[in-house]
Length: 446
Image (cartoon, rainbow, N blue to C red; front, side):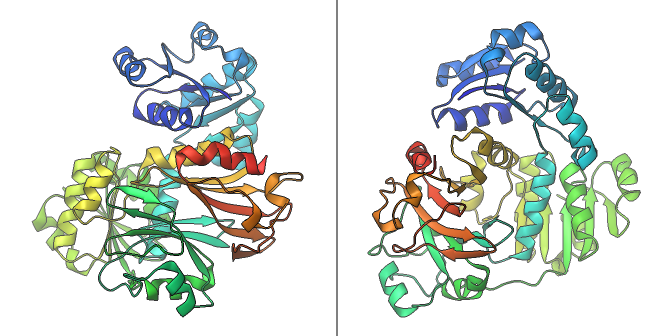
């Protein structure tokens, strides 16, 4: 696929790297010449310096032959104009990053579609939804829903309380014959692999598991995890993510929001009617103590500064908070945060890439999740008539090495995939895959 990415920093660059690894032809347009020189020296991407709202720049990027243009500049007005121009100049499909939730109403989406914008992505809203989901399943380090929760992906870090330690998958299956979940990957000492029957779980493993809703309690029991009840929530940062998160939580939990900017606090007070808004610096231990940090169940740090988010979460953990969730913008910090005890993070680049990537697949993909901290993804494919996946039971399908079918959603029911399972036309199939296997997995679903 010929793809143009219009960006103005790391989001566009990160998205370009992910998509180029899946063998697309990528041209990236960015106004920062120094960044583009760095991109060209480290990748095979074609970099074009300039303003994406310039027709000559778009022509230079071969816009008339583009299958997809993705505009992820921080200024949503530039994204809208870029996509509208690209569509008029011949690009088949366009996606715009937006920040204003007003554009997401059905009427306004139709208006933007009439201008040539096929899809919108709002990272801040997606991030807020993910935070809410993580508070609903407090035992999981990471969680992702497929088809409205009919199947779910859980990431669990195994500690000394896990009942599966030093047991093989075969032993666990024999001891628990009615399991409603399946381990699809293990991340151990910096490496990710697909587990087979003879593989054992070890302490500090990160286990990726596909589960039915009815299997969650048993999954948590075997992994030694305990759900924490959430009543009191503290949010650090009153930007778009902090505001959106508070809006989604304030009618269900007791929410306090700390924001250092006084004018922003005033503006938030008109929007957040059931949230206690505090003007102050969350790195101030005395302030946190005064605001009852020791009675807080969940601490969410979503300022624009990664270091502030990490520091304040470490401080909250030291003061006894069991659930902390920082916004980490620098992907290189993900491993660092996990090594210092912060297991759950939010990253806008990965969230944005996951939402956009489904539009770049040859097969029909209803959702994608790029996983935090490892180079892997989970995809939900739709089985089409004539596709290879529907011709034989799973055990007779040559699933590419580095991939695993975890579950199937048929109608309103999700179930765990077994060797004798036959995929039917119209089924949604959840597949875990390492990057090098994606192109081969796609062949099964074309």
